[in-house]
Length: 404
Image (tube, rainbow, N blue to C red; front, side, top):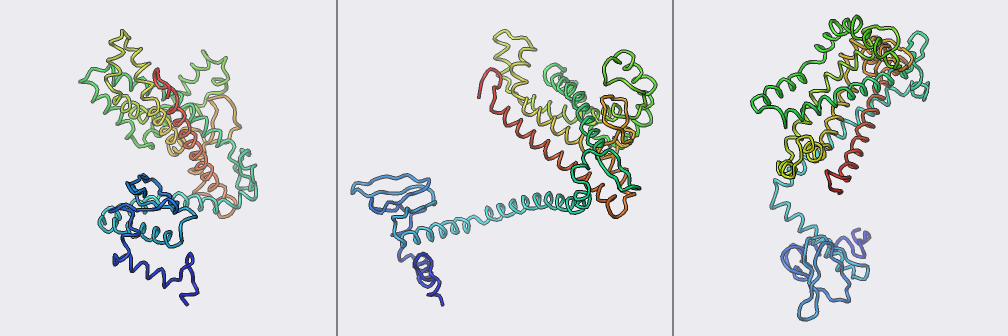
């Protein structure tokens, strides 16, 4: 039976015999090339050694030195190819046997990666399967319809997608300059005795539960916007389409400002940390050349830390896209047609899920709610991918006065 199963021209019995001989050491001198002694090979055998160094001795033979990755060219004999592969595998097993801790650690880290990937794929699979009825029923129209009407089985999240993107964009537009300014002040201008207390207060803002900020926005901030804030914006900036329309207090503007308060400490903390690790010799070199403090920050600090700042902004964007309870309390929760006015009420994908999930019955209603979650996952993945591309591009562009 074994003779009927050839392996590169050899039967299993022949291969097993060769392995036994290798282990016993009877033919070790002719094929042990990986770790203890070089292989002596004639030129006519045309052997290639991956990652190794080819040297000649006094007799004209070639010695192969280097790692155990061996590849023989097609001109090499089958015997040599089999011996090379078997020797490489045995050498690898010998190293792993001498270092069991490395093998265990490698296996554990591999398991952890598989678990993380499995969780993401499992979530995506559940969302796709549960939302399949609405995907097949509405198709791309689900992205454009603004109505979420379970009575007539008409569902769409066009207004919710618009609300998610516009509130997150406004929140980042407000929070990013403030965070960068706060990071510059804390690292370059703040007196040393005040740095730790101020940094602690900023970090404490990130520790506030979102429901607390949402309740404060609903009970205090939104009424102030309706009575004072939005009328003032309409009076002095009403020529812009962003500040036109009836004032409600609850709406896109209130949700955006609450989100900016939530992402501000995240971006500030990351900005402060990356600016703190800028080498002092860069600052001192520019100061020695007569540069001002602003020129030092512009030409040394910001170029060095901009990749980290972008990472902090993307981290804040992820928080803004997925925020649920605080936005649900202050956005108004009305499927208003997308428009440019910040005073209008609206929805986000997260608030749609929060408002409709408990009432969703089996069928298209439940499937529509799940598809809203699937779209939120897709938007988050797309923004993260774009952020990685942006960071990679900036990493290869000019830093300070140098071009990489």
